[in-house]
Picture 1: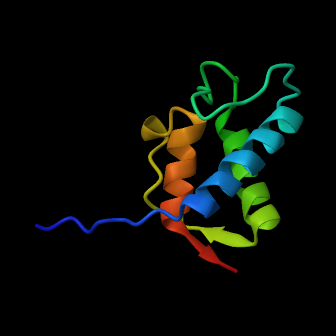
Picture 2: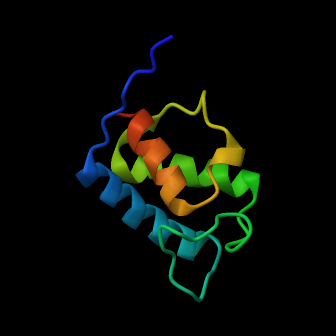
Length: 93
């Protein structure tokens, strides 16, 4: 079986990281800044329901649709991990 190579749009990824950081600060009422290395659950305290809301807000704010079919919560540890997934699985609305 051959794995297909996923091309990541660096500009979109940066928009995703920036937008996600802003949304997380507001959503979780954080005092500290959010970085790509911030751990979503362990460090920021994000719950699974807040994760769903984050995805919906990102879709709205970035005018994209995110395919969450293959989203494995265990693989999405940091903001950067989730940004990589979203960038690879997003389509314009």
